[in-house]
Image (tube, rainbow, N blue to C red; front, side, top):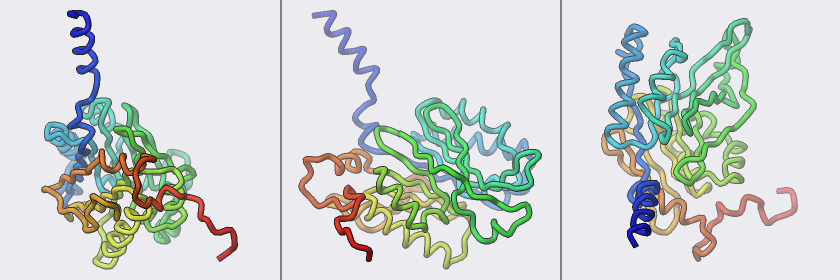
Length: 271
């Protein structure tokens, strides 16, 4: 009996708590003009401090907006963030121009920390201003998704979210969460991103979080029983995602319609 109790205690210690699977907390880090004026050392200190605070506050994923690291080198920063985050958190450092030594072109590169390792993810579809820049920003070649807390996550720049082809790939692969890193945008740009984010949540059956440099982040949930159609107001810079509910709507015993589970259309004719 004592042996069984001991084994049960070991199992409980090794198993994530139910509370951890019920909700995923995403921290969208705010940036301001003062960040751009900081020295490299001060800038690194501030980024590390933001991640450390987010971890202390219980954030599961930490997202920095697109362009926040423009003009900065990340190679010194990444090991510090890895140490602060530990192996079980996700960090998204939004896209910024990056040019490898000896190359005559650049890419728009995001760095994603997942499963204890950093992965470079280049924007698949540079914007017209990036294509005409010098050096020219060339497109990436892979849409990498990440396993996290039992689900599949995509990290996209806002421009990629607008592309139906990318949305179709996300639909086929069954993502549960899309983390969108938005740049500093004008009113029209923000409106486009937010409208499309709402639609993507419904068509993918996923949560979509839009993280911009200064604006409060928004959480969009699928149009499904038990979910609110409207964007959820963030608590400061945090959004709380009903993770267990999101994963449950993909189980085969659910009776409600799930159009996002049918990636191949029923029609066979060209329309």
